[in-house]
Structure formats: structure tokens, C-alpha cells
Length: 323
Image 1: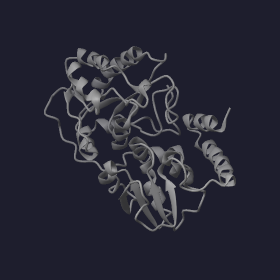
Image 2: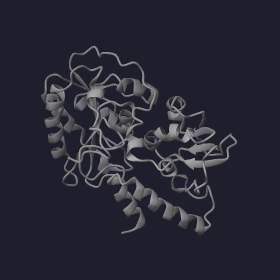
Image 3: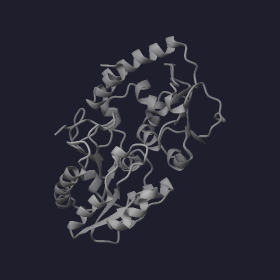
Image 4: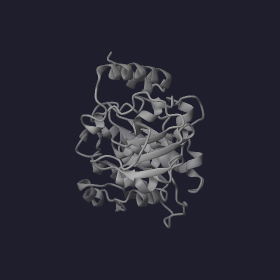
């Protein structure tokens, strides 16, 4: 088994201690290789070389996707507990949210040049978990960690569900045929609202779902806060809803990403998220059947919309329930 695969398996099992040990081995090999810092494609760069972050001015670089930044910005606060200053060089779309995350002192818009800031050490946002030796308890205990707007009662008496069916052409195996979401409307008290972006947004009317998608992510977060539930493929919206502490069901293909367990309903990253895995690659019909069954139970145990998220957190235990 190669080092990356072993690392991914450790994270899937919530064996963070093992994952960080493997990271240490990889980092030592990287330092010995003589690789030049900030060289090569940004998303492949290894920025942090193991430098001490204590009492330092730390620049956090957000070189990966929007969902990656949302997932790992939770570590800004524990970073600030050891660092003198935390500066986040973030994707422009996330600036308004990131600047209000606990632990962030300053934010700068990410661009093709160099950051307009002085700092002692820099680190990629996805390296923070390793640098801080994060535990499952630290990860779970930080949710919600994005700024939240006041949650108001939606005008509809029906269950308001936000849906996303396409993750983008870069990984089509994550996408679900939009027509499958029409199954959710078999229950008469369900109202579907499309959060889908990109060309697939036009398919909302074929479900049908009301198109409420917006490109402004702070406004999108506000709209998600108005929902009872989000049902989405593995994309940025899943991370955004999870980071806000809103009930979110994530549909995962058979060979899902390293951050999700290969089986089981819960994830340590987001206590209000439920996972729905494909049993057979390409079979989304079976996943939707499980979602419909779960939706019947969800409606019965949803007391009020205001306290739904609090009622829906995963059980408190080390790691997560794998049932």
C-alpha cells in the first residue's frame, strides 16, 4: 500500500494520530528532496515544512477548492490560540465569510501574484489539521464555525429542501441525474429549491424545483439557513451547509473522496451531515431510495424548524457511529 493510500485509509477510520504520523514521514521525505518552496502547480505545492507556528505571524494560503477552504478554515481559531497573527489568503468568493471566522485577523484576496503582507511562516489551509495535530474531538467540536444569519421561519408550511445534483465536469462520477430528485415530490408536503450552479441550473424546471441559486456565497449561506434540509452531491454546498450546522444529506459515489468514510452514515467533519453511499458504482437509484426512506423519518422527528439542526447532530462519541 502506498503512503497516500494508507494516509487516506487512516483518515476514513478517523485515526488522525496515524494520519499525522504518515504526514510526518512524507514531510521529512519532501524536505530531503530539496524541492523549492512555492514551485509547481499551486494545488500540488507543499507549503509548510514543519516550521513552528507558536507566536508567529502565519499566512494561510487557500490554494484548493472552495469546499476545501470551507472544510479546513475551522482550524483558524485553534491556530490563533498558538500563533501571534492569522492572515488568510482566500479565494475572493469566500472573503466575506472567512473574515468573520473566529481566529482570523486579516484576509487578503487570492490572486496569481504574491500576497501583499509580511509574515513569518506560511501554510496551506488543508495542512492546518496536520500542523495542529487535530483530533476527531477538535474537528467535531468546532461546528458550526461559519458566521450565521438569524434563522427565520420560511413562509411555506411545507418541508423546504435545497437540492444540488451536479458537481461539475471535472468529476462527473459525483453528479446525479436531475430527474431522480423528482422522487422527493412524491411526498405532498415537500418543497424543492434548487441551489444548483452552472449549466445544469437550467434543469431545475424539469424536476421541478424553484431556482433560488445565487453566486454570492454569503447570500447562498443565508438562503441555506432558511431551509429545513439540504440534499446534495459531494460539492461546495455540502461543506457550506455542514459548516453552518444545517441538516445536510450528501450523496456519495462508490469510490468517494478520502474525507468521507467508505461506509456508514456519519462523518466526524460535520455533525449534522448524513452520508448516502452508492453500493454499486453508477447506481444513484438505490441511493435515492434510501433518501426517501430517511425523509419519512426526518419529517416525523423534526419538531420545529428553529431547533432542527440542534436535534439532528450525530451522537457524541469519539469518532462517529458507522451504522
